[in-house]
Image 1 (cartoon, rainbow, N blue to C red):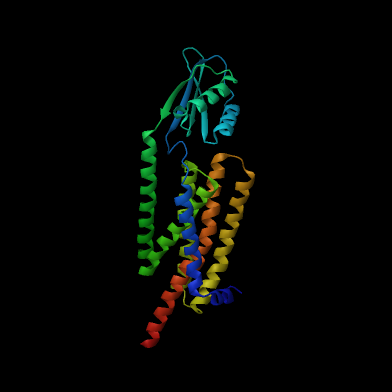
Image 2: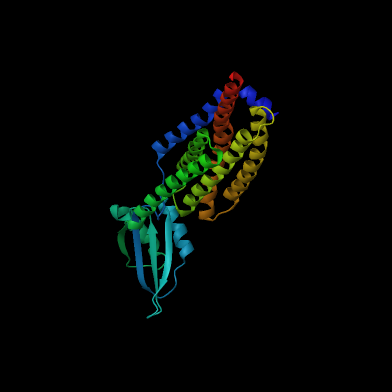
Length: 291
């Protein structure tokens, strides 16, 4: 069944489908932009000190998120000398630039018994460091993957696995823009997991096509596709369930990245990379026949 599907689809359509998806995601990224979490962006710090009672952090976060439609993180501190509480509220909203919005927020916080805050711009130097390290980590990992594949398979065509995996990341980032999932430590972890997962499926495909010699190349691709589709679809459905039914923000961000990335991996591995390896196998076979 899969063999007939591969032959009927043709290599040209196998290549064009994932490239068209990648082009659409590039458009979404350019038009919508990637939202940033507190770890990666500037914002506002609202700080309270000397509180007699411990604030209800969950209610405060929920109310501020509803008003600002931005990420909000509240943290209670304790002064060991006096036993009094403090509250630090971080948000990606630039509250200090809009006096009307600032007054609305102060009125909301006063309903929780919070008065006389200090409001400061929040622009962490760590944000720039995280961004640079994230990009460097992905580039170094991609380079290491390419070198390992070249060493194991001794064929330059396997280097094209790296662009296929990077396309998985591109689609995942496009999905983050569509769903307004911020780039956070959780979503960054999802991108790195996706990098490793994409390599696994492409290595499975390359092993079947380049290391095995029984049957035609299309038959070997179909055999690998049966195994690969089962693995990827199982993981994809699991992540989809987590995304739909789990309310934890970190798990939601992680699963969103993996849902889009794994869906893209089905196309980039089993359509794009498979067509490249089929072309390489047929070219190699024609060379030996001519000899």
